[in-house]
Length: 208
Image (cartoon, rainbow, N blue to C red; front, side, top):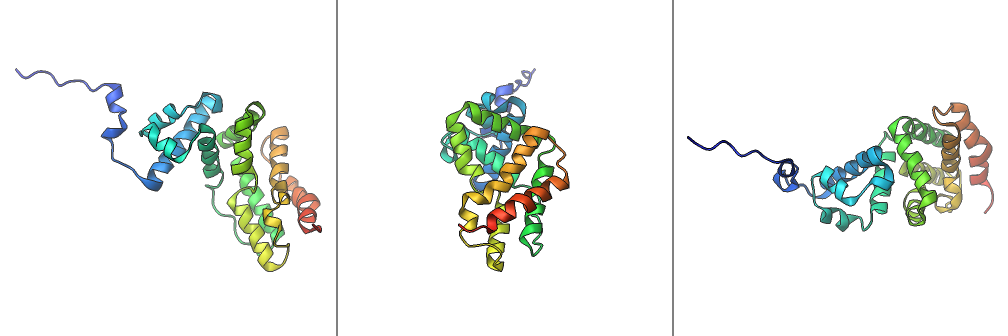
């Protein structure tokens, strides 16, 4: 009588070496998604590179080759989530372009995505190194959609060429984040138009 089949342990089932080998963007996407899932479940304080690697079914070395620290991994995962929505249209005007970008971001803040953002902003107060990474990699210039809107405005002659790289470029996002932290969602359209018309556009067009 042949021996009964050996049961596969949970550890063996989760061994990343048994699955198909992924490289490049496919592996990075799996790691970033795993990091976001860990953020949703445990928050930044509970997230470890080991847990992310296990969830992504890869080894820790694959993470450390791309991200020297968990702070850099988390910030890049958040940026990928933030920029994952549909591209706002090119409306032909800086004002309506920016309103469209802010509307997209405000909608993105509803639900789990907003909870992750709130947790990361809270963690910045507690962890100076994490705050530095967030400022340098995620908050300095804002999402790519906003940068593209500003560059189109430069080409149309609506703003000066130095504006997209200046501190002024991120002001609309900072105001939106502040409103979200104070009042939550949904963010009314009136709030977005006031940010753009009363503060952002006058600031972008003011002399250096």
